[in-house]
Length: 494
Ligand SMILES: *Cc1c(COP(=O)(O)O)cnc(C)c1O
Figure 1 (cartoon, rainbow, N blue to C red):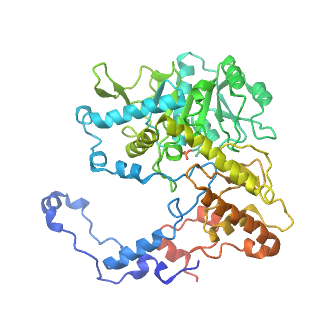
Figure 2 (tube, protein in one colour):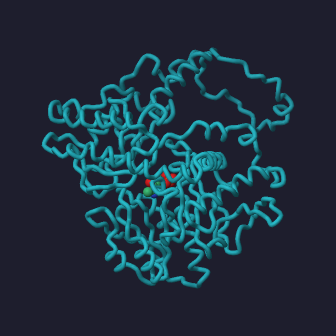
Figure 3 (spheres, rainbow, N blue to C red):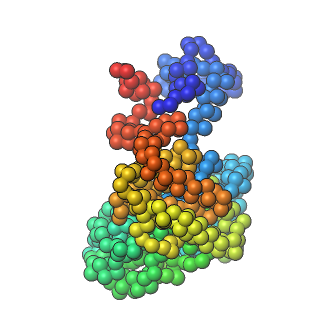
């Protein structure tokens, strides 16, 4: 750790008896008096005792140790870490929206329900689906919900023998995980050398025991799956449904619709494509859309528009609803950002998102493919994968390159995913970056390729300029240190 003086832990600033401000205790004396004695603390909590400037400086300085899309370019492949307009954040925290109580009756929350309903309709239009639920909290949660819809649909047809879900070997890890949690056996489908799904392998695995096939398009190596109509036909002929993982919708939004391609069920990661900043675990939203005929299976509650134009919350949902999968109606402030984003861009603006994201990715790819190994030749869609440096003789790996990029002021791309290549380095520039930013990133990547030859140790020992150096990922996962007491115990021998 390159700890600076102000990088002391907050507990290390503590002095017994020191405090920052007086809370207005007088405000709730009655409430305190009513609190049963058994619920009252008998001992003061073990908190650091610090003055106000120390607290403010501590957390402000801590915040500068972080890297976010507001501090620099963040080309994390598979994650669509694009810049999200601040206006949408401001709207989401506007008092009229943030102050609405979740228990408000529908008659007092018509505006909120209209926002909800309008977003449902907008996503249905964008996805080419009949109906959407906004309830799921994340992409993975949407996958699980979608698979539960598929399960409920097969059950409603008394088709109980479908125990398998087919997932391409290039899929995001959440696909097999969701299928497993939904009670299915996961069967892997091979990819071809160009990264797209092996349709022959898929066909050979289809049968009366298959409930669904999950696909991502563009897939997780950034290639557009051209064979979807033929795949959809084969899947449907086998009595299964086709699921669309919409995490990569960004390059297609406003241009092509999963519903038109033959997908039956899909989710959209609003925190990737539709303007909610993400990272650190949330908040997010993974709305699920279904084609006509599957609406009644969606989770409850659902928001409907009645014949008289009023909006209502139907607690029980549709006739075959799988029931509640989330608290309330989902992550409301994420919906505000998404709808604000859709309405500001409009249909024409949305149709520019994908082509620009695709152009940026191809530009970066072709500016570097003389130095970095491109296992799947382009053109790519919104992201692409290098298999490390072309020149492997220096011993500089993808991990070293990623760490060296931190020194040069860039967030690292996704590394060692997808698993199809040994040295995967997955770059997604997104449409929100200027040509100047892309050129600076290209320059940094080219410089690292030069350093790998001229001074490989410099690259291998990176990062040199970040507040923290190399973390031991395994140790951090096995023995996380998240409290001061744990920190003291972990450092007791030093
Ligand atoms: C991000 C991602 C997911 C999972 O979405 P979460 O919102 O993180 O749960 C699923 N599939 C793909 C292809 C993804 O990129």
